Image (cartoon, rainbow, N blue to C red; front, side):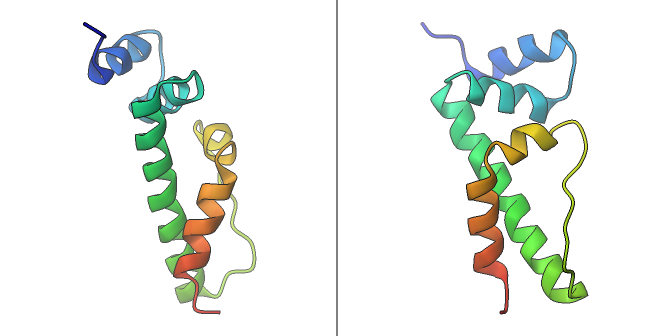
Length: 88
């Protein structure tokens, strides 16, 4: 039987890093379930960014931290989700 995603994430975390980093890494490595969840997380982040832009009238948003490269690898998902949330 194939190893569960939970087991794969736990194994990656033992190598160092957090949950999101492990999940994004598995998705980038071709695990379809992990990629589906990672894309959902990036989509939720995009929606949140769109909401913050609406409230604070921001011109620039900077995504940083340890998962930034993984998020930016899914930039299309992030931008699409943010644009659905924007007023203008």
